[in-house]
Image 1 (cartoon, rainbow, N blue to C red):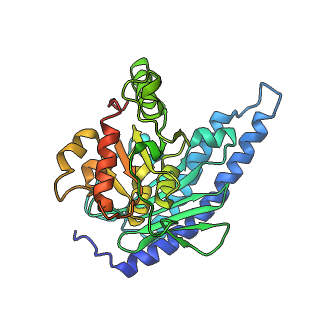
Image 2: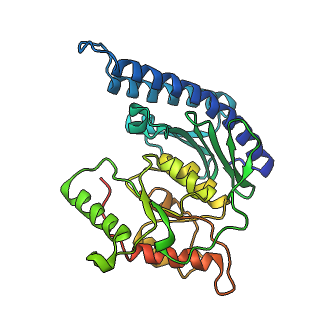
Image 3: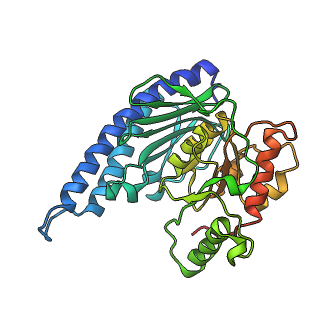
Length: 329
């Protein structure tokens, strides 16, 4: 079967539909959050449904809602979702249009009522991310992006703002002026936690006060949502985000949004080393999308001495020279 061609107009129409759908899913996410908070406040220890049950229930309900609506509107498109994938439905990527969805990204935040959880809805076409919508219903922030058409942030139903918010983007001389997003992740084994803690120490630490190789980054942040970290890099509020262990549905939408805002995405240290001086640098291939190791750095403005893309390359190298690689679980 031949792969349908998606024109820029097609993508614009898909963006309009998926934006509306993301907001609809957001209403269900808020409903779930309220239900979880109600259970958490219940003093009866024999309550039939605890918060873990409700997280699973609403993860599934949001994914089913999105999958159903997308299937009706785009019956010839494939679908990869966190819940269906983990249940054993694991379609490989093809050239065909494929929606890639995380129904609730930031589930720990969702459980605690910390307002950084979202739906992440991406579209992969010819094995590349081409469209992304990320909606945080708690703050009513909606990020969107289409390959070749830019990315935007809508806040409180206001007019969409082109990303990055600062134009032209600010320079970034070194990591010691960077606000960096890092995450602890779900793998809490001694090997992984020790490696991450050592990396975080070097990024934040002061070499003059005993931290060997310390970079004195401006600060580190752990927001608890891969998708929203990408959105914050796209808008320019975070300078860099590093992640190990995510899946394509966590990052697909965010990759498009960040790239369309001038950000640069690459994979593991080895991928960066192999591509940083080639014309493949910044090309998010299928291997990078599914590789579970990611670095994204925000748009950086040109200076009289350095092009923005060269600054992005330099910052990523400085970063990777400072952290310790770990294998995703």
